[in-house]
Length: 125
Image 1 (cartoon, rainbow, N blue to C red):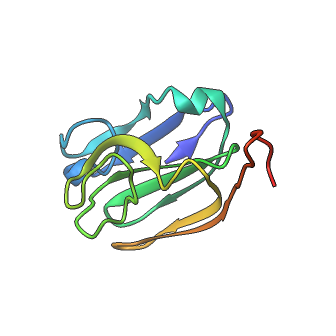
Image 2: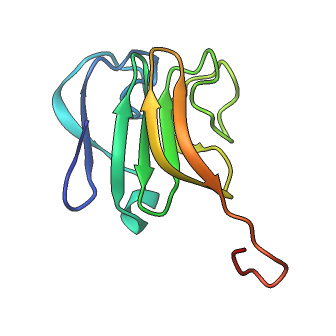
């Protein structure tokens, strides 16, 4: 995986279990291709991590996106059910979590996060 200056993320390699985030399990991808994801246009990708069968990116605004194999719930996705693979990048964790770091292991994901609390006026406290 390689982020480019204009926030394009290129992937290549083995695509089984949706590990490339391209929307299908089409097998090997020998030539780098772009993952298209509208939310990345809004906020710069600041870090990425690739595990054995899943991946994660973190954006400048503290959001994490995961995709790939999810048998143990390693995607921490709010939209992808446990044991269902994430075909394309989807939001991980909650809206109130601000992610600064993430690391993917073989079948786990570890993040450093802080929760942003807002009062009734919408101001951070």
